Length: 183
Image (tube, rainbow, N blue to C red; front, side, top):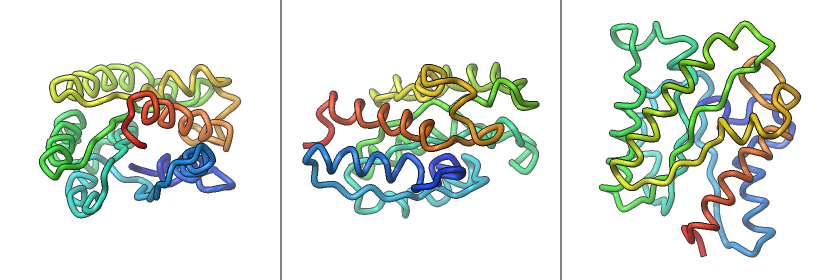
């Protein structure tokens, strides 16, 4: 992931830390590694993906917002987001790692980035299609943020406070536990 996975704006490490605490409190013996890189885009995540997931049982993939809000550094000014996400899902499956993919979270509605929300929604549909083709579980963190106080969970135009990261962690937690992906 990118800065949202990294936990930018969080006082406690973002959703990976919160998710790890939720899982361990529920009795699961897990290690949750935070591999978020602020500013990262899908082509760059794709380049490091296989080495990053080496040794993992499950990978939670949440990437793409930077592709939409600042696509120019990508090749040909296009990041080919859903294509790269599909490739990463294939890589995980091929490596014997169970992928779970997230929708891209929304931009704050009272910011200049609100104009990107329609593109984010369109990309989320593409991400869902890529996941569906492969039988991969999708976690709707776009909806999780919207259902948890909207703009009140943002620290800036794209990043969240701990309440927002808790909503994301809870969405991951429910997906992992309800689908028996961890035991």
